[in-house]
Length: 544
Image (cartoon, rainbow, N blue to C red):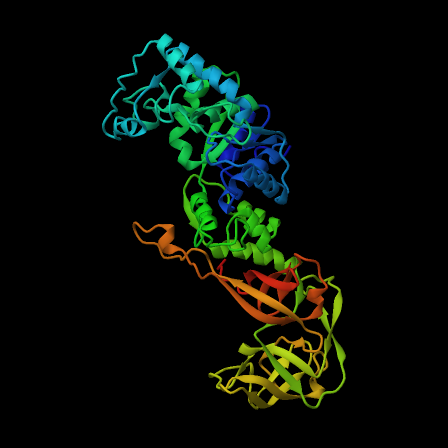
C-alpha cells in the first residue's frame, strides 16, 4: 500500500484519516452505472476515481449495475459498459446488480413498515410533489400517513402481487414532512411499475427507488466508501437514514465530488440517446459522440483519457473544463506514440518535367522518439499535393506553391511551378513543375532560400482514401433557457477525397497516424474503402 499520508485530494484526506483512526481497515469502492445507455466521458472521471482510489490503497472496486428502472435498461448497455471498463484497463473485484438484492430490499421495506417507518400512500406523483412544501415552507402530511402497520403490510403485499395499476400506490418512508431537507419529507421508496426487467423478467411489478436501494446494495457488497457526484449531496441524509433504519450490518460512507463538464460536449445521456434515436449520428459509437465507445472508435487512446482524468483532479466545486484541454492530452499521447505518414486532401497533380526514374527518401517513423527507426518513401516524376497548398492568386506572405514560385517537398527536393493547367471553370487540375537537383533534403547546395515546406504523395503508388473531419456536436454559445436542441451542430462531419501513401494501406485496421501537417487520424477499413478518420487536429489550442 502507498503511504496513506500522501493524499492528492479531499477524498484521500478522508480515507487517510479513517485509516489512521482505525475507522476502516481496507478500502472497498464500487463503480455504479445505470445500464440505461452507454457511458460517456463524464462517467470516465467517476470510473477512474473509484477504480484508482481502490488501487492506490490496495483495496478493491466492484462493478455495480443500478438496474432499478427496467423500463429504460438493456443488456446491450450492460455489455457496452463492461467493454468500456476493460478498454480503460480496469478490472473489477466482483460484479453485482441491484436486482441481485431485490428480495432483500423488499424484506427490508417490510421491516420498515413493521417498525412504523414506512407507509403505503395513494397520492399521485403530482399530488406528492405539490404537498412536499418548499425550502421555506414545510410539507403537508399525506392523509394516508396514519394507516396502521397491518393495513400497510397488506397493501404493500398487494402492490407486490400486482393488484394495483402503475402509479396507483407507492411506499413512502415516514421521516419528517417539516425537514429542512426536502429529500427527507417522506420520500417514495417503492413504486408499482409493470416493465419486463432485463434480468428478472416479470417476477416483479414493484421496484425500489434508487435512493432507497443504493445504500442497501452498498452495504450488502461491503463497500466502505460510496463515491458519487455532487447532486447526491442533499440525498446523503436519506442514504444514512436508510442504513440506520433498515438495520443492515455494514455502514458505508457516502462522499460526493464534482462531476466533469466539458465545453462543446453533450454530457447528458438522455440527449445522447436522442441523437442516436433521431439518426443525427450513426450510433452510440459514432466518432463524434463523447461516449467511451465513440471515443474509442474515434481513436482516442485509453491512456490519454486516464491521464486527463488524473490531471483534472477531484474537487467539491463544479466547473467546466475547456475541450481543448482534453484534446491536449490526446495530442500529447499520440505525438509520442503515433507513426508518421502522408496523405493529401483534395489532391492536385504535380508533374516534374525534368525528373526521371524513382528514388527513396528517408522518414522517421516517429521523430519524437530518439530511437525511432527510419522508413523509405518513394519519390517520383508525378506527385499529388493538396489543392490548398497551391494558389493562383496568393495573398501576401504566402509560402506555399504559386506560379513561378518555389516550395520544398518534405524530405525531398525544392520544386518550382512553371505552368498551370486549368479546367473549363478556371480551376487548377495539374501543375507543371521542375525540380532543383542540388536541393535534396539533408544535402542542399542549391542556395535557394525556401520558406515553405509541404507534404506530398507519389501519384503512381498512391491509394484512394476518404478523409473525415469532425466539428463539435455542440456549439459553445449558450443562452438562458436554451437547451441542447438549439445548440446542436447537425453539420459536424465533413468528408473529402484523398490520396495516401501505400504505407497506410498496408497498416492494420485501427492504426493511428500523424498525417504530416494535417493532424492525427485513425485508419479504418469500410468495405473496400480506406477511411482516415480524424482523432484530433494538429494544432494545440490549449494554453498551459
